[in-house]
Length: 426
Image (cartoon, rainbow, N blue to C red; front, side):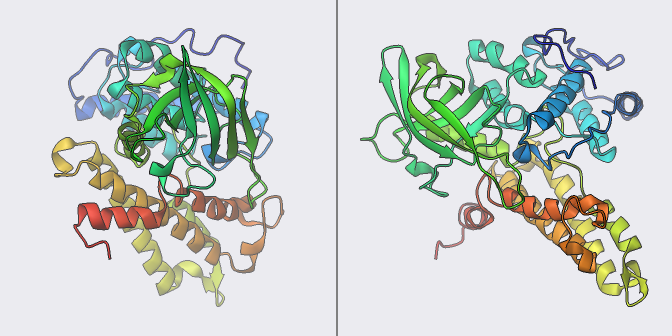
């Protein structure tokens, strides 16, 4: 891919481009229309598939750690947007396509099937963008949404803190009003894309005297101001991607405040609902490399156990069937989460369980893939004898991040048990 000229990102988008006869149609498409659209999508994706980069691509947006990786993925997102294949269900007034979600679902499915690269602005597309569209002002929608889609503006999240763990309500980062600004002091950790982000969705304490929840406020904060520093964190895999972000008397404009002071907890919970899968993905694009049960099946076909193909082992076959059932259940549950009538009395129940189930499913699937490799499972990326270049080893280690981000699996299980199933806390 050639580099995108400076200032070109987001400059020439025609909403709905790439959709023959479907633009400005609020009605649900017919099966025949979706089939025709799918053919068009596949044709475009195959013709515009990015070339092999010549360097190692990250496993997900949480592992983007070099300028090469970032620019490659950012340009890919820009091309998808220019073709009309991102934000298809978002309002046309803000740069989206104004189309039924079914069209975007087709694009997402074909990108995964063709194993195309993910897009880097996951936090903008799936968390910040949906929140701004849901409760943001008209000025905020006009200011932020189009550049989220085009990848002109990359977003990160400032929730977790070094000393608070999963206790989000105990946020200690302070934002003190001073005239037309807020002065921010404190630190955030596990800031994915912090080194590249232009904006952060920031949870900070504006009233230290109020009860834990009441004193929090929510900001759409610029990152490129004096007093903000994002320091990369090297992971066990040797990769970067996460950052610790420090705020030292950082001044951000007062109009960065979303809603009113003291409403931060409500907005943070809405954001976590998006993150856990209620509408995450609506804007389109993949957030990680596509590795699934079908890929594990290929390993099982090639692997040998006791001189015979591993696929002939009853235990291996049983495990594969279980993973296939789980995978199909995840797909159906994700679709269900978007249908209000099917969410029950607690709209967040389905996304809560989805996040818990899918993150643990991926971790166990990758662990199983390694178990099929025998002694080769210890080989790492770069070893010429590693299965598939070592991508399964890297995927397994990185999968643990998904069981922590957005609420650990243990916290998720507690929430589902207590708030959805009504189980006692002890």
